[in-house]
Length: 359
Image 1: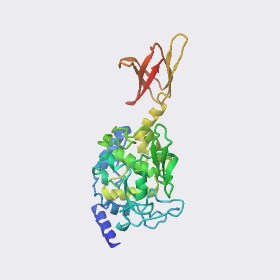
Image 2: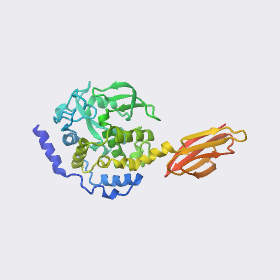
Image 3: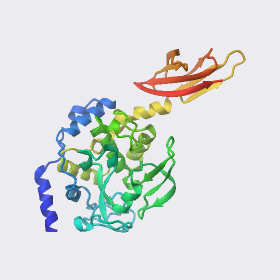
């Protein structure tokens, strides 16, 4: 215990501070991806990489069960996203210190280790991502191995369930049918905000981290629309920010000198990404080809909050139609010959592309 106490004092001496009241001032008035870029600048300044082994010491202040709330033990043990049972007695618990850290793992409850919520392999264990306490969290070693590099999502039929109720199995998400990992509701928002933090803090390089299947290879949206939809739902509806997470964020700032903006300002998530979802949901809500006694018309029905630019290209890449149409309308395009076409619909520099076959 004496060894742990001395290490903790060392970390505090690096920077004993709270998040300044003006920390986000330069982001005021911004929205969309401009806001995300400015937040990246804020988070990069002052971020001190404390190293990988030091994370275990950092967890004393960021991930301890000191929660005065029904369902928590408030006993100073390690708070595990995948092991905590907020509705009853935990199936197992770990005290901080090397005696409970993983060596060999055979079952849940054996030991704890460090999990990268955004898998380490996706960024080749590069620094400072590998050591960032905002997304590298303590976890039961066996549960960590079960999750592996799986994306997060909602499970239909579970192939494995942890003692606390986390599951892995087939996805029920629209546009993603692979295997996913689903934490319990109590920590879904924590995990969502950790990923949104990562997408923001590392936007300059995140476009190359596509082995994590939630990422789409861009620096702006970063996440596939299906992934963005589930994370924003968890962030806004399933598990909004609570005092436990605010305290954790303050401790993380004290540990490495930067904060998670989506904890301090939950509204930033929608300010950056909600438009990407609304475009995907609203633009071209129905595209169909209807036979006409005289001519075959392409009917595009739109229900949107913004004007939409429509472009249609033939199989040779020649543009055969272009028009900007109002927010909610039906567009009839005549004289399309039999063949394959690509239709591009653009709002706010976001383009949705669909292939059409005219028979």
